[in-house]
Length: 489
Ligand code: 5AD
Image (cartoon, rainbow, N blue to C red; front, side, top):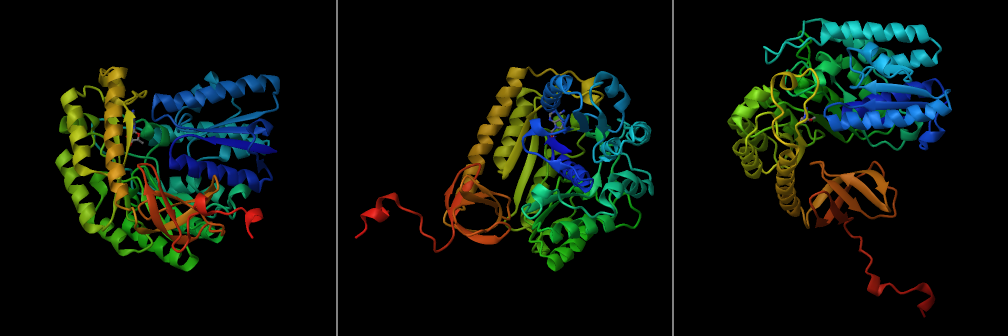
């Protein structure tokens, strides 16, 4: 059969969709770009904000209408809309959906396709029961330690074990030989209790993947031509904290770095970090290992201490400021990305101004700015008023966006005339497109096939979103001096 997957949301979903695609292809199914031609439709969903959830429902409604005309179509729903808790309730609400898959768990679809419908049901119920146990969040505590011992078992049971056959991943056909940069989950779920965040409810308790599985995953990707891997976790620096005497993220980076040297992986990244879990040892490891890129994603969320307290982030703005200085001191040339939420419950104009001032002061390389969106069951949704108007949220978002655009334009302008190392990821509208160590986008021209190569590019133009460059020695075509062949003597 033919399948088509829509992937919404974060990089973890990208990795989860890839795992599902890999498993479908092992069973002989093939991807099609034209989704109308597919027999199996899968939406891998995100619910971090209402707008993301609306997108999933929009697509679902469209598919439902088409399925009425052709009932043989199979609809699969995956990811955070399903969550680890309540597929039964969702099943009643969406009777036309054939299969519900919790985040990182494609097994229900495979069981369904193997004509094991009853087993798919049992798996969904089992996943719900397990999650009920796992995802209990106690809002009184900033952070809940997972029970020692359980996570690795959970992970081996259903997060990576079955689909990955011990961690190996065979890329789907359309990515084999062309995918340069891939994501590798290392921590599933999240056990923090940020008051606005729905993720712990939907992805379950934090559980680290056994290192052997990660190693197998990375090696298998390398052998299929992948040149860059990004280790993923909701709080990636928490890696290994749930495995007694296990490696931490710094150890894991050393292990993955060794594999990278053996297998020809050029670059390693990791995300997302939490300010409270970034140790100096981790930062020094990033600085010391040449294939680990100088690129840190560490969300700030707000620039005011009371707002941070209401969000239960567990740090002050002064601590965040010190962290940024520490990162810059220890990792030369580092790029730092952040996330900000504007219009959180109770955020006053003065408090917002402090966020603005902090961003203006710290001059980070990228800021993902989101308007606060109350999510079901979260503490902020149940206990706090969503009292900033939509217009005011939009005003604050735009103010930060404008500021950040100016900052990034300034930062990027410093690269003008510099030569940077670019890992070439794909061909885009007649140009090669790649990234610098700091994860900045670069476009340049060349007739050679440079896919997956590391090349030095001289930057000739910079903007806030991307840069343009040329290979040293190459001359950019000047339209005035081009003489048509027919006119040559
Ligand atoms: N409303 C708006 N943004 C949110 N995020 C998480 N939860 C919410 C919410 N309820 C943002 C945070 C996080 C990013 C992935 O999404 O900034 O870092």
